[in-house]
Length: 167
Image 1 (cartoon, helix red, strand yellow):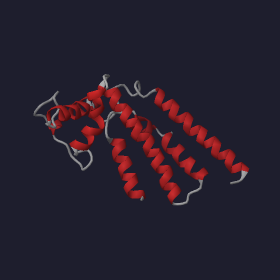
Image 2 (cartoon, one colour):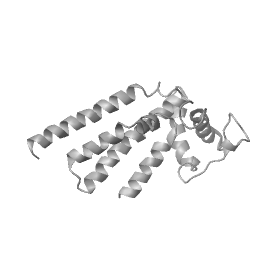
Image 3 (cartoon, one colour):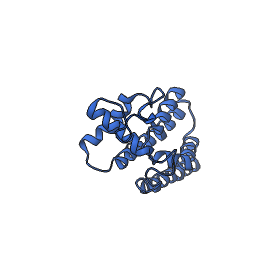
Image 4 (cartoon, helix red, strand yellow):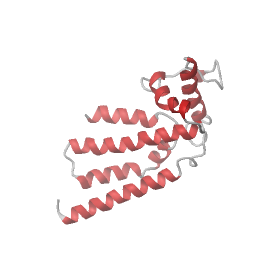
C-alpha cells in the first residue's frame, strides 16, 4: 500500500472512531426514550415484552395485556426466543434502566454491523480505503444514529440481512 493510501486510510479510520465516540456519547440521551422513533412507547413495551417472556414464558406486553402489542410479526422480530434472550437476559443480571440496557445491546449490534460491512467488503476484495469510506458513510448517517440509539431489534435485523446477503 502506498504512503498516500495509508495516510488516507488512517484519516478515514480516525473519522470512523470520532463518529462512533460522538454517537456513543449520546447513547442514553438522544433521542429521548420512547419518543422520536416509530411510535411513542415502543422502547418500553419491547423491553417489557422481552423481560416478561423470560420471567414468565408468556410473550405479552405486561403494560398492555390483550392489546395488539402482544402480537409480533416477522421471522427475527417475531422470534420471541431470540430477541428475549438477546435483549432481556442482561436485565436479569444487570440492574439499571431497561431502555438504557436495550440501547447498549443495540449499540453492540450497530458496531457489529459496521464490522460485518468491513469484513464483507474485504471478502469481495474491496480496498481498505474504500472499505473505510463505506463504513464511515454508514456510521455518519442520521438513520444509523437513530437506529443505533433505540432499544429495538432493528439493528439486529439489519445485521442479519447484511450477513445473509453479503456471504
